[in-house]
Structure formats: C-alpha cells, structure tokens
Image (cartoon, rainbow, N blue to C red; front, side):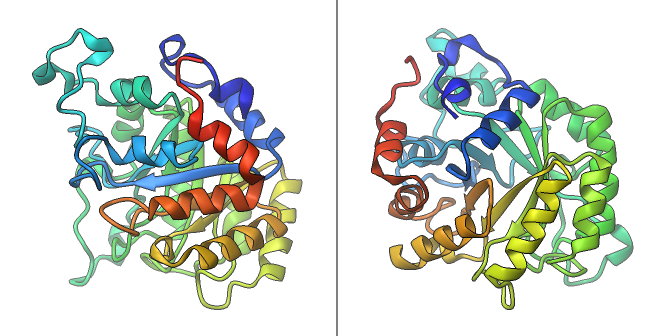
Length: 307
C-alpha cells in the first residue's frame, strides 16, 4: 500500500475510494486493519489507541463505538488541529486531527439494526452509530474514508438490514464500503454465502468474513471457497479477528493470520477487545510479521507520516 499510505499527512483530507481499493488489492494479502474504541481511556493516556495501533504495524484504523454526530476521541485533548487550534475547539475536527497524527485511512463502524428483531436482550445503539442516510452523510463530512457495516453483540443487526444499508451508503457515501459479520451478533447466519453475494451486488467494496478459527465451524477450506467466489465478483475480502482472540497469545494470533492468508484474504483485521479498546499491541505486530515479514512491518512501524 506504499503509494497510498506513504503520502504526507498534510497532503490529504480523504483517501480516494478507487485508489484505496486498488492499493489493497495490489498489496496481495499484506494489509493489516486494527479496530480500536476511541471513546474509552486509551491503553496509555499519552497517546490514542489509534496511534498505538499504527505504531505496531496497522495500515488501516477502524473506529468502533464512535458517534458520528458527537465524535470524540479520547487522548486527543492535548493536541490542537495542525498545531494551531485551541484544544477546546479541536473536538469539532477529531478525525482530521487523528489523520494528521497517524497518516492512515480511517473508518467507522455503523450498525444496520433491524428493529423488527428488537427484544429485551438487545443493546440500545445510539443514533450516531446507526447505519442511516444522515450518518453516512455525516461520515463524509468528517473525512471518514471507509464505513464498516457490521454489528456489535446483541444489537439486532441482520444480513437483510446490512444489504439495505449498503444500498443507502452507496448513494450517500463516497468512500469504501465494508460489509459483513465477524461473530454471531444480531440475527442470521454469520457465514452466509448468498448474503455475501447480495452485498457485492448492492455495492460493497469489501466483504467481511470471520477469520478461520474464530467462529465455531469456520474452517479454512470453506473460507477459501467463499473468498475465491467473492473475489471473482470483483470484491475484496477481509478476515476478521473479532471474538476477543485479539487478546489471546501471540501464537494463536499468528496461526489465525496465516490461515487467513492461505484462505486468500486481502485484509486481516484484528479487533478491539484485547485490552482497553485495542488489541494487545504485540499481537498487532505478530499478525503483521506473520503475513508480510519483518521488513514491511518494521518499515510501517518506523516510517514518519511526514515521509
């Protein structure tokens, strides 16, 4: 992803959708996405979780639990936008400030809740986290580069609602659209071939699947067959570690990462439940080294955003 991700942070506001998709495609399975929760106390308060994830090898940062109508990233309080804006005003531009600091594409989870599935066990999802026309428009205003249409546990997200959200997002949002489930959140089958095909037809750029070994019964062979079929339709694929195994030992993460790469995934994702809203940083590094070696990992870790 060198051409897209090594640009100067001051040279962009958003990453072009086609360029970003093509950059991932050309990376041949060597792209790491780290998911973080920006609203909780960072692992170390001197830096945001997104900065920490980038420092350990992430290429893409996915923000979970962000309210797009009231965006707040804990850990940015001491930073001013471009070094000029007072801290109390910076809250209006947190995504641009985070981009200035990390120089990477930034995405946000938006949840396509199917309210017909509503039950007493469902967690309430704030308006700013729902997949809606207004949220897609706001994400564009904030400079978000990609949206991930998926569900956190117990939110009532269904594959049918994801499909409808993709159609809305394609109309309202100019960036990259990722869609799918990484665990048994909401209702419906987590590994649904027909649903994935409908997601591609609806306009999704990247299909999210649970990585082999994360959800019971998801084996490498079945994963590989689905990936091949989706890629033949023109979509990219993302293998997600979203079952708290981001907090497992290094050997487990490495094993899942290699299985995902053997299965043909274009992106390997690591979730936010390892520590305080972030995977264990050493696991991000181990994942990166497993799928692309020390050379590319150390360059990603060391390269300044000003290069």
